[in-house]
Amino acid sequence: MRAGPDCPVVISRDLPRACRKVPWCAFHKRICLDEDGKRAFMDCYTDTLIDTVWFILPPGMAWYYGKWHSDYKSMPALSSACAGRRGAPTFRIIYPLNNSRIRISPQSGGGDAAFVAEAIPNTKLYWHLDREFLGVIVDDHRLSIKAKSGRHTLTVENARGERKALNFELLSSG
Image 1 (tube, helix red, strand yellow):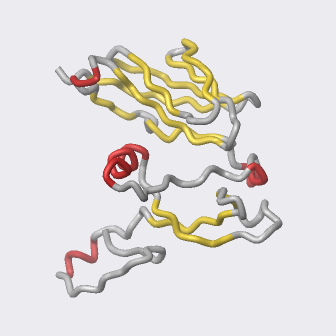
Image 2 (cartoon, one colour):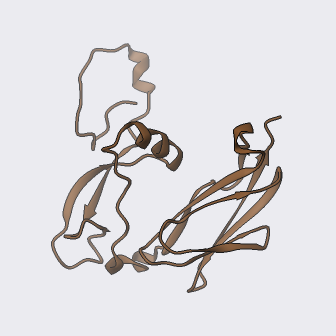
């Protein structure tokens, strides 16, 4: 990727004209932090905010990158002062994406599927797979289950009734 406007380190090189078609960096993003180091928005926070650039990777990449780079920090949680503001939901499903096709690894024992959500601190999320209740998770919004290959519907909701649902397909690797 080419260095974007928020990339902290830029190295200039003469490259072939075709390199202009390479996309801009999508991993360095400008965010605001409150004095506690939580993510905040300018329109919902009255105190001083710290404008900073954060290196943000998708969950799968972050997991692998974090294993080899101990200094990697995932994006800070959203400040409770900004929870539910700006018309934004208090949580979102990060992985899988809607209509994903996920290949089950043979090393997983034939059916482990992992799900990841992001929510404001202390939010209870209720997880369902194909209308079957899986459990409640409060802080680390990650869930791993055994599931058969085929099409499934993942539904996550919070105590306020906000609900997100998506469809995905598990493919066997054999």
